[in-house]
Length: 513
Image 1 (cartoon, rainbow, N blue to C red):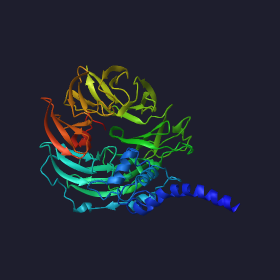
Image 2 (image 1 turned 45 degrees about the vertical axis):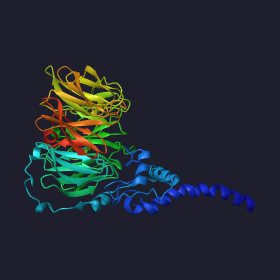
Image 3 (image 1 turned 90 degrees about the horizontal axis):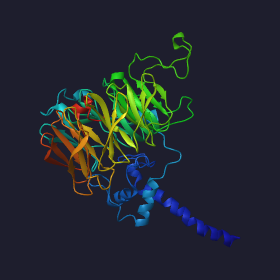
Image 4 (image 1 turned 60 degrees about the vertical axis):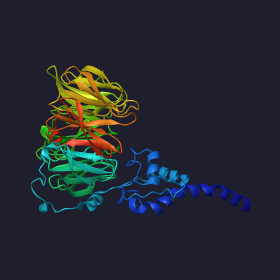
């Protein structure tokens, strides 16, 4: 009997030891920077949700070789190949139970780097503050501030790990707020070129939005599934759990948007068939959830309209949104690619959208075609741009492209729109130029095969367009929109996005909001 027990232990024990080894390796070599609970410290969080855009081979490479210009060392001489792979696999395993991040955690995380009272009330540089570009360089986790007139950088600083969802500006363009994938929200004073404050809003964040009056900042989280509301100094005001009305079902939050004309935020939910509108108008009408015979007679208990979700029930989950310029209508796409239009005033679906494949409405644009308002969207599965009439929501035209694309960009002062094919292995080095009058591709710009050319942003006046050569040793490629020729290149470390202050604060029709 004893011999049999020893035999069983001899067989099973290596399995336990092997399973425990990655966790032990993590505690010994990683926890001091990334936290014992993998929630982050001086290094980023190492949870599956935080690493969802980092492929495992790239994670293994990072562990083996480290990261240049960061505190991440190389472990090539510390781990053998089996240990390295096991550690990478461990990082992609979900924690059980799921990590929590409370309001107390949020408040305790807030950092004030600079006393706002000590900062100048005017720009400390001579460039036009409304024609600046904020350039996110994910290659080495830095941000560059670019003069849009001279097309030269004026400042560069280190950012949090893996900024996500695009920065959002205060209405005057002075402040820009960055959300990182592992939940950090940073406030940067563009006029003074300094980070003012930071706070950790969650453990995995999708994006942030700034209210049209600049008083509030709201963050959309997938872990925990909630919305977090701050004042403009990043002091916590409230959290809103993303749950069904009865509280039985929870959801991740896909994104949150500012709807300035409505004085509200609009939230997209990843797991609930609802659209939420959260008013930041302190005089907002009360909210009556469910059916009420006559709310004017006081027949139901209402919740305050201010900073509470007003729910629009749907027949399917929509988690990719685009809005008309008035923010009356939201166009949404489901995971199976079906699109529909929801009227936020009457709170119901008013039309279906004939969009095949998987439209990427979040990167759509609007413009006027033959005197009528239209919107256009790329597609993540098929090589085409769909143009939809916004009066009748009918398909106007399908424009063939090199391959599935992510970004579509234009400017109100330009007759052209750029579309990439970055989701296509063969076409990702191509940018195509669409004439907004003929709705035809009229020109192509190319990078070397295998490289990615994507994400265009225009200068304030629409004269120049800046495209990203999306490589570690990449660049911003500047095109003159009168001659349609390349006129300049600015070296950058994988510039995944660039954002013009004027276009973003004025919500130009050619850029995403």
